[in-house]
Image 1 (cartoon, rainbow, N blue to C red):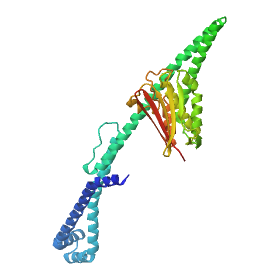
Image 2: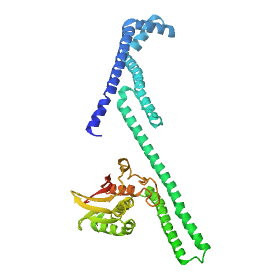
Image 3: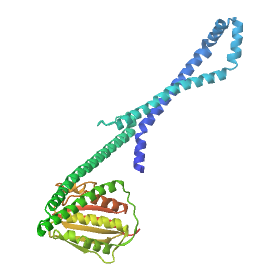
Image 4: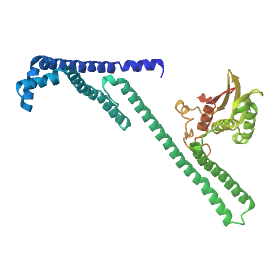
Length: 379
C-alpha cells in the first residue's frame, strides 16, 4: 500500500473513530452522573438513615447498636466502599460500550457472508465503515472475475478436448478404412497400394499430432517451468530454427528471412526460448497467405533484445489480439485439423518469456501480423 492509499484509508476511518470517541465520552459522562447522584442521595442525604434502618430490621438491633455498626463498617471504610462502587458502575457501563463496539464485528461478519454468497448485490455497511465496505466489494468483484475466468478456461479446455476428440475420429477412420482395403485386397495394383499407404501414413501423422496435443494440455497444467540460463547465440538459434521449419513453410510456398547481426546474443534458457520462437514461427506459418515471406528480425535496443516475427495474413481483430496468449484459445474459429491446434503454443510462449523477465505482444493491421518479443540482454 502506497502513502496515498494509506492516507485515504485513515481518512475513511475518521468517522468511525469520531463516533467511538463520542460514544465513549457519553458512557463516561453517564457513569459520572450516576455516581454523583448516588453520592448526593445516599452519602449526604438520607442514605445513612436507610442503612441504619436496614440493620435494625435485618439483624434486630436497637438504634444505637445499628448506628455503631454503621460507623464501624461504613464510615471507617468509606473510601474503599466508594472506590468499589465507582469501579462497579464504570464496569457496568463499560460492558454496554463493549457490546456497542462488538456490533461492528457482527456487521463485518455479515459482510463476509455476503462476500461468499453468489448474490450479485453490492455489500452495504454503516456509513462509518465505508473503507471496509469498499474493500469487501473490491474483493467480491475480484473473486467474481476470477471465478468467471476459471469457468471460461475450463469451458475452453472442455470444448478443446471435445473438438480434438471429434477431429481424431476423422483420421483414425481413414486409417482403418484404407488398411481394411489393403487387407481385403492383397492383389491390389502396386500403384493403388502405394497411394493408399501414403494416405494412411499422412493420416497417422495427423493423428499423432493430435494425440501429442492432448499430452501438451496435461503437461501445461501439471508442469512447472524451470529455467537454466546461459548466454545464447541468438543469431545461430534463429537460423537453425528457420532451417528446421523450412519444409513446413515450403508446403504453402512460404519462406523465412532473417534480419539480424551474426554476433547477436541473449541471456536465457536455450531450450525454452527455442520453444518460444518455434511456437511463434509455427503460428505465423499456419496463418500466412500462401507464397509470402515471413520476416524474422532481431536487434539490441537499450538493455533488451527485441525479436519480431512478421507475416502477411488476415488482420486479427483487436478483441482477439488480447486473447491469443490465453490458454486453450484458438484463433481458427473453424477449428480445422490443418490449422487448428491445442491453443497452447502462444500461452506457453508468454509463460516462458515472462519467466525470463521479458514481454511478448502482437499487433495486426492492413493484413500484416507482427509478434514482438523483448528479452533482457544481460543477467
